[in-house]
Image (cartoon, rainbow, N blue to C red):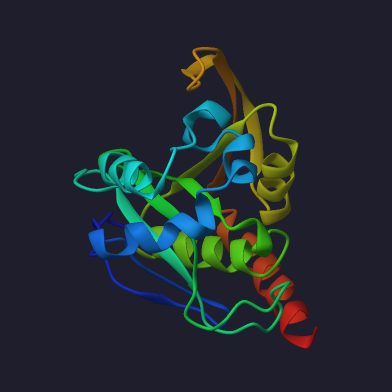
Amino acid sequence: MTVTRPQPRILQGTFVSVEPLTEAHLAALWPALGVPAVFAGGYGGGPAGLPADEASFVEWMRAGYLGYTDRMPFAVRVNSGAGVDGGPDAGRLVGVSTLGDLDEANANAHIGWTAYDPTVWGTAVNPETKLLLLGFAFGNGYNRVRLQADAINARSRAAILKLGATFEGIQRQHLLRADGSWRDTAVYSVIDTDWPEVKAGLLARLEQESRA
């Protein structure tokens, strides 16, 4: 299948809508993401990377997410409270993720730069967001999608495995954290031949959530 660079568009799910990230989203994401628990697992380079206030957060998000030719950032918005712990109001922004490192020559992509409001951890939000983004990538001809996490972030690593991704190994001293220490990165992937089984597993999880 020929790889086609996808055009950003809203990806509509049952529990969430994944919509192209714009400047208008940034300040609205501060209440969801600007908390120590989000940065504790390695997001933004770890705890030392947490911006001090909303204005600093908006500036940081603008620099890290917008204006890149090889990244498609998305905001994650809840459609309904069904299956989401705490029952957040419909329409609330609860996270961000990116389809990035887009490499048409090698048919590779990377789903990362992901964070969610802690109130939706362990709910339908992450599996449906990944279902939509993986489908977006494979539907446009990419044959490998990488996912990764700080090697010490057991929660994120377990969530990636639960998606059905395959563990590939550890990249040692891969990235600098915000405090200047080295981060080892745990790398996972889903390839095109994995996708039917991964997709079926995610749909089954979401079906269970819809019955909850």
